[in-house]
Figure 1 (cartoon, rainbow, N blue to C red):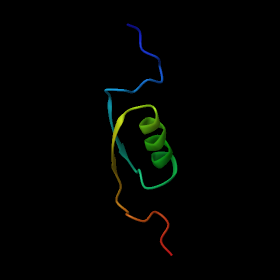
Figure 2 (figure 1 turned 180 degrees about the vertical axis):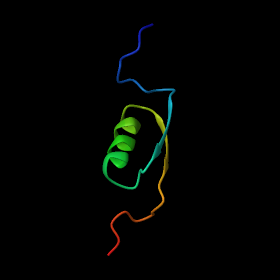
Figure 3 (figure 1 turned 90 degrees about the vertical axis):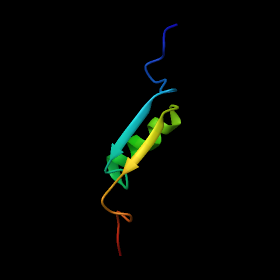
Length: 49
């Protein structure tokens, strides 16, 4: 069975820099595509006051 290029079911992704910007957007898109996403970042709040 051929898989779609955007089907990430049964796949796992580990995203660094996931608190904001490109890392956050990538995390969201991969999760929406069905991947199990693990996120990491040095900062809890990417935009401190």
